[in-house]
Image 1 (tube, rainbow, N blue to C red):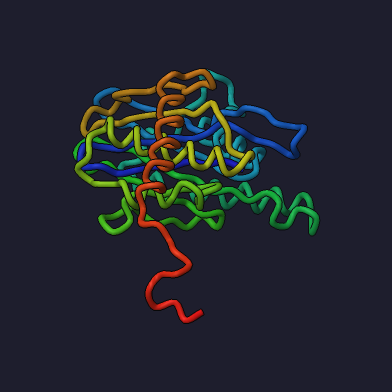
Image 2: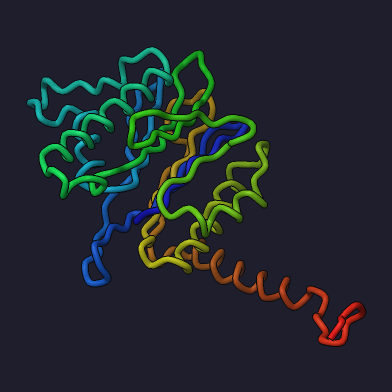
Length: 251
C-alpha cells in the first residue's frame, strides 16, 4: 500500500508521498513514488503513483521512453501544450499498461495490476493544475470544492487535512499539515512508511521551490509526531467529562 497527497494552494502546489511497498510483513522495500520533470522557465510536471509496483514503473518507463537508446529518448510530457493533454496522455498509458498486463496474465491477473496516479504541474502562461487519474484512464481535476487529492491508504490522514486546510495558507503550514496527516497514517497502518518525499512548487517558477526526503531520523518530523500526540491527549482531557448520572439519563 502507499499514501500520496497533492494539494493546491493560492501560492502553488504541495506534494508528499511515502516510499514503502510490501507483499507481506516480512517483505518490505523502499521505492520512490514521486517523479518530476521540468523545462526551466517553461514547465514543471510531477506524478505520484499508488498501486501495483510493476504497473506504475512500466508507466514511468513509457513516459521516459526507457526502451530507447539514451540519445533517442524524449519525454512526451515535455512537448504537450496543456496540463489537460498531459493528463490525457498519462491516463492513456496507465489504461493501456493495465490492460496489457491483465491480458498477459489471463483471469489470474484481473484486478491485480491496478494503479492510480496524482498528476501535478504548471505550463507557462497557465494555472498550476492537479489531477487524479484512475486505472481506467479517466481523471478529475482539483477545484475550489476539491482542492486536494489522495491515493493509497487515504482514510487515516484525510480528516486532518479536511480540518486544517486553507487555500491561502503558507507553504510552511501546508507542509506541517501534511506531516501530521502522514504521521496519523503511519501510526494506523504498517503498509505506509518512511522515508517520505516532499516537493513544493511555487506558482510561475517552473522548478521545485523546496524538495527533500524525510528520513526515519528526521528531527522535525519526530517533533511533529510527538507534539501532535501530546496535543491530542491534552485536547482529549480538556473536553467536558462524561457522567453516568448526567441530566436526562433515563436509567
